[in-house]
Structures are given as C-alpha cells and as structure tokens.
Amino acid sequence: MKILLKISALFLALPISVLTNCSLRASADSTAGIVLSTKCQGGYNINIWRNYTSGELLYRATNPNGNLSLGKGTSKATEGVRVYKFRNGIYEYWVWDGTLDNPQSGTLEVYKNNRILMRQNCRKS
Image (cartoon, rainbow, N blue to C red; front, top):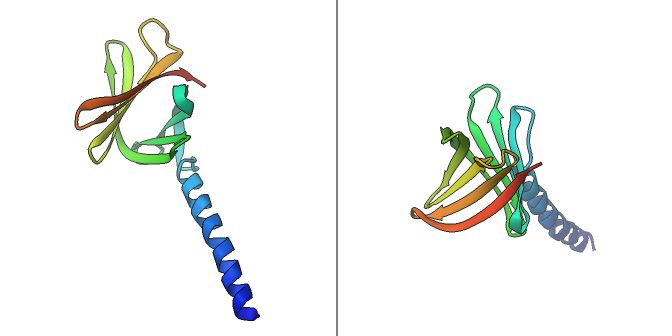
C-alpha cells in the first residue's frame, strides 16, 4: 500500500512540477526591469526585459501554443521606431516598439531562415 501511495504521489507531482517550470520561464525575476510590454493578435503577450547588471535583453512570450523565453537580444532604432531582435536556432523574433503612425502600437514578426512566417499587430499594455 505504501508503494502504491508513493507511485501515485510521484505521478501527481511530476505534471505539476513540469507545468510550474514551463510557466515560470516566461515570468520576470528581480534581476531585470521591463522595457516593453505588448499584447498582440492571436493571444501573444510579449515582454522585453533588460538585465540590471549585464544589460542583456530578454524576450518572454506567452501564447496559446506555450511560452518562450530567450536571451541575448539586440535593440536598434530604425526610422524612428525601435526594434528588438532575438534568435532561437533558425527562428528570429522581431518586436517593433511602435509605428511611425502610432507609438502605442507595434508588430511581432517571426522569421524562419530569413523568411517571414508570421506578422501580428500589437498594442502596448
């Protein structure tokens, strides 16, 4: 009976720990400050953070397909609009902070092998 109880507890704890780990990766910690927070079409919530000590840019996204956490981003002002770029293997994630027409809007673009896969309109939150 004790073995069955231990096995049951293990099967219950494992999914909880996996879910907790996955959801925590997209959250912030006390070592970084928020730079940009957007809500995009398709349920994408994007947060750009800057590490206080290293200055490293961090990408945290939640969406219906799961969470994504990336580091080592770059930032560049292009035609008066700032763009944050992050790489994950053959994928690139570009987050545009505003547009020339509306500084409260923005865009999320996802590229695979330098070809655009997705473009979503966003608004600052």
